[in-house]
Image (cartoon, rainbow, N blue to C red; front, side, top):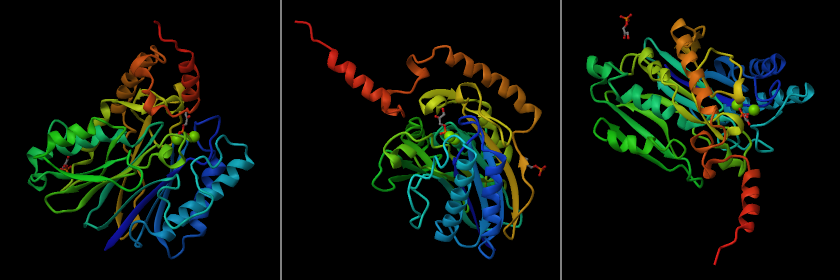
Length: 366
Ligand code: 13P
Ligand code: 13P
Ligand code: MG
Ligand code: MG
C-alpha cells in the first residue's frame, strides 16, 4: 500500500519564554486534528521538542497536499488561540502569514514528508530539533549514510553497496528551490565541500541507489528568508526510513554522540553543541543547548505503532554529560569569536542598526 508520512511543526507559544508548549496548548492542537481529520488521515502522533509542536500523520493524499497542510495550519491556529488565552510567550510565533494559501511551505511551519510503497516491515525515525537550523542534520546525514565509521552496513550489507544519492539545497537562494543531486561514494568530496557550510547548503533528501527508494526528508525552511527578519530559529524536523536497503537505526543514531557545534542557542545567534535528548524535553541553559529528539515507529497500512524514544537509554546520559561540558566551555567565551554567529547570520536586527551607527563615528587618520 502507498502511504504518505507528513510531519508539520510550529512554535505557536511557550511557557516561561522559549521553553515548552503548555499542556492546554498541546491538547488544543491534538483535539483539533482528532476532530477535523475524519476520512483524511489514517493515524497521527503529536509531540513537542523544546517549544515546538510536531503533528506527525499518515495518509494517502501524497506530499504537499493542500487539505493535509490546511489541517495542520488550522490546528496551529487553534493552538494559538489557547496560547493567547494563557498569556504564553510568542503566541502564533511561526504562523507568518495571515491566511492559508494552499501549501504551508513558506508560511512559517516546517514540513518533512515522504510518500512510498510500504515494505512488509516499515520502521522509521522522526527527528525534531529546537534552537538550531536545518544544517544541523548535515553532519549526521553525511556520517550515517556515507561513512563506514558509523554506517557499518556500507561494508557489511549488500543492500547498501551502491551508496546513496544526496539532494542538497542552497537555502540562500530564495526565489525558488535551488538544488543539486550528488552521489556517494563517487562524489563524496563534493558532498563534503557543500555540507561543511551548514548555513547555506542543507541536505533536503537522500535516496537509496540500490532500489531508488527515498530514505530521508528534511525540512529546509529558513524563517528569516520568509519573514525578512528574525522571528525564531528554524528548528528543523526530519524523517528517516531505516533497515533493509537503508542504514540500521543505530547507524543513524551513532553520529549524534558527537555533539557537533551548530548555529542557534540563545536568540538564534550563537554556536552550541547539539544535544540528543528525550522526547518532550524542555530548553534551559542559555536558551539551549540546541537539542534533538528522535522518535521511532513502525507503520503498517498507515497505522502507527506506539512511539519509542530513541535517546532514552543510559548510553545517552554520558553523551549528554559530555555535551553539557562542551556547552559550558563555549559559553565561557561569551560573545567573542566562534561563540557568537558571524554578522551575516545574526538573527537580531538590533545589532545591525547599532553597528551602522558606530560605523558613522569612524574617522580615517591622515
Ligand atoms: P525559538 O526559535 O525556539 O522560538 O527560540 C527563539 C529564541 O530567541 C531563543 O532564545
Ligand atoms: P537483528 O539480527 O537483531 O535483526 O539485527 C540486525 C541488524 O541490522 C542490527 O543492526
Ligand atoms: Mg519560541
Ligand atoms: Mg523552537
